[in-house]
Length: 468
Image 1 (cartoon, rainbow, N blue to C red):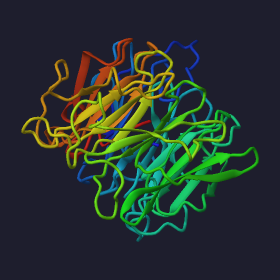
Image 2 (cartoon, rainbow, N blue to C red; image 1 turned 180 degrees about the horizontal axis):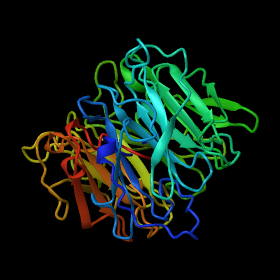
Image 3 (cartoon, rainbow, N blue to C red; image 1 turned 90 degrees about the horizontal axis):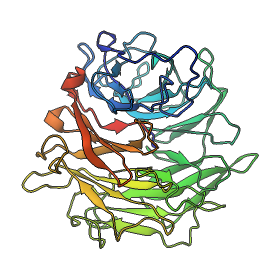
């Protein structure tokens, strides 16, 4: 997924970017919107006001550099921004889901944005997806993705977005999902014509989430759809893989979780599936762990073996800080990336409901490191809160530090940096960043950027989604 960054009205859009030399070719990196070789951060503020329209939504882009990101190098984009399709309307939730990829093969990464509550005609809450185009000056303009005619009211189409080369042809493809409607938009895309084609995905059922990655080592990304069942929102995990001529659906009958991420944790050439299962067990959901857990299913030439015993991690696992407590939400958000540059994907797990002292729902994130034997829990595990020395701010009630997490290298040093959504910061939200280093995350140079710092108004919800 996911999946899943930008913000507000054209009058608020800024582009304080260093110019790319005319002779320099764009980097081609996913997430590098201006092609300067530094990946950028995109975050949703789905409940930002746009003019007089509450919760119309916006996306905030923070452009990467050798010194990281800052509020001074940003762009704020809404459906009222020049060249962006549609109109900012109350409740659209533009920015509720995000994903990156170079869709038109020009070397600049593009951004796919979901407006999961967009109304179409007299159908409320149908949802829509929009591509924002990358270029030398960053993101600008866009094109709406073809809208299925069969979408129903409050179907929230585009609540889940993922990008990847799903059929191994070298082009970036897009999938959007919501309620019972799921589509693939096959690349290549053009700015005037959109995708090559779009297809309905059958047999998926009700799912509001999707994420993608290559779990079979064949160069084609698998698409994972957590399938809702009664009483358990992540009760069945289905994924689609490319066979060379068609897509084949497989399932992991013993897997459970929502959301997820894919990264090569043991460096064997196959992506591994990390599933967050944040719900506490109850009568209709006997599985899981109090306070939440994650499971890791290791990939292979045929995908994850359904018979394997996955790695299970929770806050009562030896070596993991904290303790499993009701409604911690450990596993509410997960991300994979190489934080220390050793070639093994590491895992960040959010627990936005974690209480810090007397501050309820202040939130925390936990970092676990990959190794040749898989995810390590016996050593090196660290947790971070806003009370951690060097992290800006302080842990306060309702901050929900970890409402979203994403790992991406914004400093071009070969080590993934962490962006943390803090959905409840000052009641309007914010984005916190911590740098990767050879020894793991460092608080040196850590930053906290609030909704106020990027001129957003309304309930905002900055940090509810970050691009993956």
